[in-house]
Image 1 (cartoon, rainbow, N blue to C red):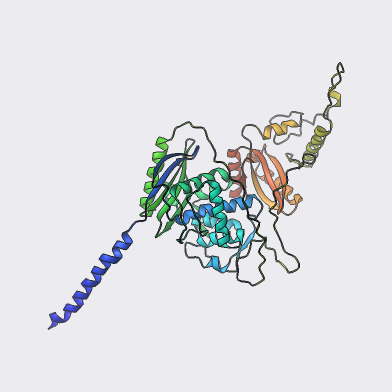
Image 2 (cartoon, rainbow, N blue to C red):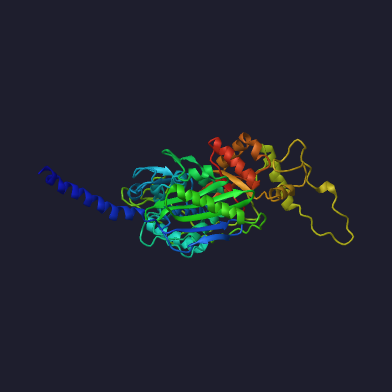
Length: 485
């Protein structure tokens, strides 16, 4: 009787186990479709591809495009790194991975960028899209316009974070193209993708790809992605001895196996790529911006995404509106002087030399007339005053121009945007005195923007600009690189 009583229980357990073996286990074991591509970043040559043009789920590789559009908006004055972004309920409700900012709170744009790039935070990505375009749907349309301009012909974005959505698809080739553009188009921000940890305002965050960054020699980015539909995705970049390889994998079965495959593909790229090759940077796409959309006015307390503001309180009497007109060309008759002096005396001297150069240009001499004598030239400046950007105490003012544009010195750094020209110049002088080792020889320049005055050091090589920025950031000084215009 006892044996017969246990029989239904035993058969029930067998049926339950069979159900899990036949249904649940096979479903979890199904891998996402695999695709891969390896590219020589120097010239865009494809060194290996497998299923590279198949449209698949990109997962958080999407955030590469989100950040590309944000960098473009910053560069064109739509928004600033220190602008405060108010977090909407929609952004705060995004599922993990997330930064964890509360709805209604505000946070500087730079921290959202770090959270999206390093932690792959979905709430940060959504908040970035809303800050730039007012809504995530509008931002996705801008992402698609930008993708088309970059030559990403088989990509369609539906959101800013990459969580699975019908029609949100890309390819290994398109994501590799995007990774290459991030490196060449925004070198001043590219270091974000190699930070193992970073301050994201409300907390410190760790890189989702730190294992590969720490284990593979030369790896410095770029972005991971995972969803159940996509599998384990990664676009990685590495540089060795002047050679740079970018590899993309879709559909990895685990973090470890994906990283191993990417390392194998990077090795393949370094083995196949020639040691010497001419660098052909990808063509920078035109700035598309907003397609004539009017600024969205949001009433106080209204539950809609708000456009980022510099902690400005809008009233019914006045509203802040950003102008998206193209930036005016500098007027040749009144250029902003490049400050290369160590004190007010040297600044006055440089300005006087520039005026003298513009007003004492000699006219053609009549036939047989005597040459201009040296006495009518501006007096040579005292030898004890030396321009920081001049390699030698030459009396001719054009030496400043020659040094700032020769030897690859087309780079610079920005140490902030300020409400007045005086504050920008004050910051430049203070920074130059605190970091003379790397900034000696650079030109201090204040550039007026619609949103304020940029404090820049110009006339640097890429290496010296990168070193200066890293040293300044270590001293808690805001800094990003400025590439050749």
